[in-house]
Amino acid sequence: MTVEKRIEAFAKLGDFLSQFQPDGIVKNEKVMLNETFFDAFETQIKRAHEFNGWFTGKNVLTAFYTWGKILNISNLNHWILKYDLSTIRPKKIGVIMAGNIPLVGFHDFLSVLVSGHDILVKQSSSDAHFLPLIAKYLEYAEPQFKGRINFTDEKLDDFDAVIATGSNNTARYFDYYFGKYPSIIRRNRNSVAVLTNKETDEDLKNLGEDIFRYFGLGCRSVSKLFVPQGYDFDKFFNAIYDFREVLNYDKYINNYDYNKAVYLMSQFKLIENGFLMLKEDKAYASPIATLFYEYYEKTDDLMTKIQAEKDAIQCVVGKSINSEMVGFGETQKPQLWDYADDIDTLAFLQNL
Image (cartoon, rainbow, N blue to C red; front, side, top):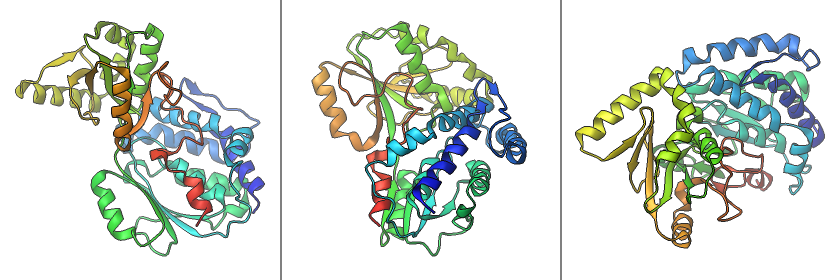
């Protein structure tokens, strides 16, 4: 199968996924294979919350629509431009996926198949229903994918290389079992935002999207703020007020109540607004319904600190400090070339 055919198949998938929008599902009769797959996808989206309480309808639709908009011919061709994928001899790549947010393992799935390799997927039980449907769609859109996409619930076996994503604890397990194979093994990372007191209300409202989308469970979710000495959090709280709808979800409010009780019993100082707690803490990984913060004095010193601790950080959100920062509200909208943990997945797959 040529690179062009692989690209075309994923572009067709992009058109299909774009029908599932956060503000409502809009069926487009011109989209390929709707008669075969549309109802099945719609049903699975509506049932997602039954299998995983964090997978609300809006969060699932946001994930689908985000991928739908990214998967187009122009983006895909731009992404692969610097790689030579036409001479790759197919190998079997085992991919172990996390399940913290909907379709969290899709970029690895896409990378393996676009590069021309075969894939053996071990999904998380927390997100096990969407990718098999997507695989079937691809097999109908491009029949040459048949036999090249496989799933397993068992221990990975008979593979040539591994891409595995998990916690710091599971990463040690992955290192032990897969260390003799070519591998990418990802660990815990979190995202941070740098505030300077120059942010507009719109900036801070958009930051709320980075904090609350997927309930803060993703590695691209902002879990910590760096703020200048004497920062007044009232402006921040006012800007994110619209996100109070998180209180409508039992799993979120249960975590809020539990973590608040723990903090109060431990006599930690908190700043809160009824649906989000702010706690001064040097750590990066904050519990659900909690955002850590840390004061800084000089911007240059802060950026030096962030650079030194970059292995713990996925995204740095902000503006007007350096060009590598992610814009407010953009953390959950990565481009195809925004690789997790800054590890170039396509380069890895090209060089096997």
